[in-house]
Image (tube, rainbow, N blue to C red; front, side, top):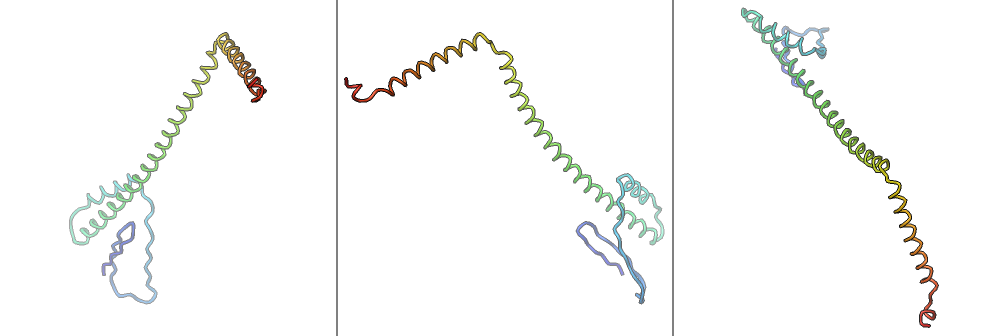
Length: 152
């Protein structure tokens, strides 16, 4: 009896023959991980099997199916790793761009401080101080005025 089981990740073909007897058991375990090169080697070996009896044809068919399934799993794994690496590279590029912008702002501020003309800065400070003192004096005179003082 051939039974096909479909799981979310793979299709399993099993060939069972004979009548079940008490004490018989069947266990299915997942195949171990196989690297891409081993999967390609298995596929090449399966393609080189000679055509012959129906049993050899079935063995070759099963081996080709296993090899193709293994390659499919490897491609899925490579795609997920590639997507993960791509998202990490994108995040790193965003951080690098932000860092470059911050670095430019810091360099501009440093340049303004280092390139300060002290004579011009002291002249501007004196002008601003004089303007501030004049504004304070005018405010104090206006604050002391009342309506009666203004009408006199």
